[in-house]
Image 1 (cartoon, each protein chain N blue to C red):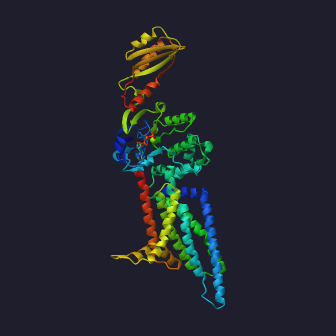
Image 2: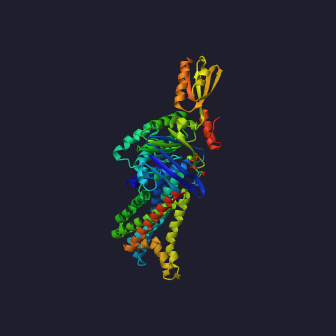
Image 3: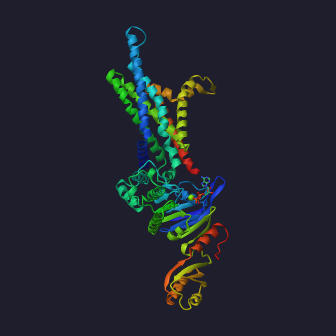
Length: 312
Length: 257
Ligand SMILES: Nc1ncnc2c1ncn2[C@@H]1O[C@H](COP(=O)(O)OP(=O)(O)OP(=O)(O)O)[C@@H](O)[C@H]1O
Ligand SMILES: [Mg+2]
């Protein structure tokens, strides 16, 4: 759906993004991760046709962003970093304006407006001036604006900034709900958010892609992942039996009140399945089994601080 | 085209939601009223002097011409208030990102914004028609002249508004846009008197007449004398179109940065 080749943008002689190559499949949700100033916004501005690249190409749905901007823009919904709102308008008026801009036919306008108002939980503020709304509500108006014409591709620049935890959750669910139906790229600084919603992530640092992988193997490039297992009791020979699973490199039991196991293994789904089977068969009373997020976080930090991708 | 209608609607909405439009309309009508009253005074004075055999009388048409020349000048002060926010505010609010990523055609944006500010101006000028109405009740001015004057006024306003838009596109501060628009319009008017004093020549170019030609004043005056010249119409229209084109270029150039 989205193809980016050798995309470079220079502001004067400062290179904001440097020869980016990536693609996003139809129906995929791609997380775009990077520090401040990494070049996330710049990439998105180019993809949406807001500004031209210095070199390289980008295409969306088969149309080149620079050669067929109109076709591309029809397919895209875009939430910029700063929600593009007009404080003097009511929420409904604003959405109706965006619908006009996006060429939504008159007959569908009120239906589509109502739909995004519901999706983004704006029902209570629909007749209020945008200028009087709180930051989080403005952000939601921005999100509604990006969705109003039911675009195939959504490009969201830090969509959950300024939302309260409940809303962050709802926004994530909203985005997750778009999986299969729409292609989504969204940027964030928050790793757990990516872990919760995305199929795949791209980590960008100082304008270069430093990692690009599916989320379930993230943090495990030729390395080990850690899995935390909570059990009610430690079954017979649990430690030995786990260690015997091929691919498992280490087992740590931490018992202080609760029983916690940390299993270090290769990042393969078969191994996970085998480990869980062993735990269940040993009658330990499996409570919970989850990847240690810390590992992802560490891995991410190691990527962007350039200390290599190894986990310890 | 549908894009520019969307923009036009939104801009008009913004105008009526802000107090500025009402304040300006009020102030404009008040000033026009004061001037009108003053002229009526002068008119009566001259005519009573004339009745006793002294001096030249003044016709109602002359009175209307003066009134409209003053109106054309006063509208120079009104224009900046209506055009200052057109683009400057979009830049400040980061809303260009919305406009530029929407599937708009090439001139939709500039056209929609121009039409919005222009229709506000036209609205004001039409409201000022009440003064003409008084004149009609009260004497019998030559209506064709009033008609051509209004035509001239509408054409001149198109220039004002397009120029104001261009200046607004060059800054992100409404105040700066307003001040420069005002200065630019004033200079345009002054070109007339400036040009008259200049006799310099470079090759074939006679600077004096050129400056006079560039000023809208002379072109407007012939309308207010009841004359419709093609060259005047061409002047106003090409001024407007060229300025709109420049505005388009300036707005586009924002994306390169
Ligand atoms: N208009 C501009 N002129 C000059 N340099 C710019 C401009 N916009 C961005 N940059 C530079 O380009 C680089 C990438 O910026 P960008 O806004 O894409 O980062 P980002 O990843 O979105 O960061 P953040 O997480 O803070 O939003 C930065 O070094 C920034 O200073
Ligand atoms: Mg950014």
